[in-house]
Amino acid sequence: MPDDDQKIRLSAAEYARLRRAADRDEIRQLAYRYAWGLDSRDVETVASLYVPHVDSGQGVGNEAMVARFHRTMSDVGVTILFVGNHLIDFDGDDDAHGLVYCRGYIEPRDGPHPGRYIEQAILYRDRYRRHDGAWKFVSRSHELWYGIETAERPLHQRPADWPAHHDGLGTVPYADETWQRFWGVHGGYGR
Image 1 (tube, helix red, strand yellow):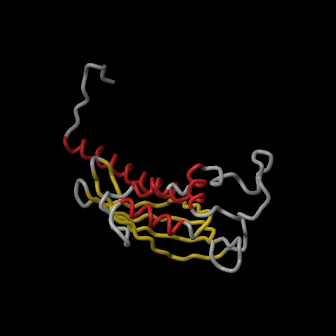
Image 2: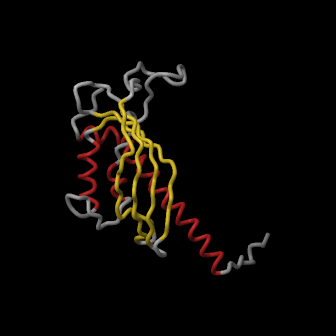
Image 3: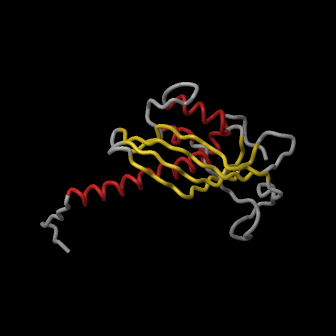
C-alpha cells in the first residue's frame, strides 16, 4: 500500500473503467432517488433529477416538471416503487440510455371502490446526460407490462404500532415532511 507521499498511477484505460463504473453508479442513483422522491411526494427533488431544459410534455424546465408531478401524483395515494434491473449503455462520455425494471405498488384515488390496490410491472426507458458534472434524466418513458388490482387491501388495516406488532399499517410515508407538505397543497390525504 503506498504511503501518503506516493501517488497511484493509473493507465488511461484503467481510469476510463473507473470513471465508467462511477458514472453507472451515479445513474443508478437517479432511478433510486426518483422512486423515493415520488413515494415521499418530494416532487421538487424529482424534478431536479432532470436536465434544466427538460420537456415535461406541457412546458419546458424544472418548474414545468414540478407542476406535472403535482398533477400526476395527486391522482394516487400511497406508492411504493421498487427499482430492480437497471441496464445502462453509454452513447459517449456525457450521454447514455437505459432500461429500468420497476415493481410498483399503487393506491389509486379514482374509481368507486376506496382502498383499491394495484401492482404494476413497469419498464422505464431513460435517456441520461451529464450536466454541470452530474448525471440527469433527459427523458423518462413509463411503459407497462401489466397492472393488476389485488384482492388484498394492505393500506386498510389497523395501525401496526411497530415494534409491538409485525402486521398492520405503518407510518411510512404518512410521517414524512414532504408527504405532508404535498397533501397540504392538494387538500389532504384521506384514507
